[in-house]
Image (cartoon, rainbow, N blue to C red; front, side, top):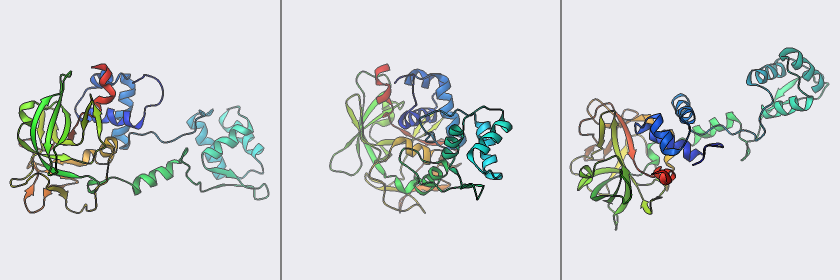
Length: 321
């Protein structure tokens, strides 16, 4: 992974995923070969705005600073001008920035503003049609709200971890063979969990993550765990649950997606998955349950983050092990 250029959405999701697994800035930067300042910026953006991807923008950098753009926008919306030349002259006077009429025209276009005919003498905001290459901020927010992922998009199932072994050539990656009620067991690559915790035990698995190849092994699901500063525990299904049982959240109904991107799961669900003071796993304070059999719990961790223990982000960092 290089040190130059814009980070992809997958890379940003990887940084957030590592952060949620309690990795330090130094560890994430060394693992992904990124500057610590870049890692910090991605994490700060995630904490403040609950997103990992930057808003789309034009390829050409702005000639105007943000404060100058705000001055231009205010002039264009609040005052009337007979022509673009008059608006440009007033903007030069108000901001002290020497720019051409073409630059002012382009900046207004990028802000979604256009000058009406001179006899009307005013600027009106115009509704823009989102393009695939350039989507305005308002349209992106609206699209995110309409397509926001919630628990109904996740295919959570009870599984039995039949066998666990260390992934050859690694120090902290493990391969599990998991029965989730299908004709054949799935393979899952996880990290940080000791082998003795993943032998012949029941667990909750996220089964519709996009499959990934990690060191030549297909990772076809993710083990759901509970994380704290002091350790990691496997989220346990209720007594009586069997492989293949669905884990659901009351009020979030619908068919799960066929495939989900890991970054999308972290971005939209992230901090809403926690254990309560009774160690019960909840989503927005509603328990995760197997209908008719009970709720899913952590063995001891209360009020802690519920996370996915999966090693697909290691695919990007494989060359650095």
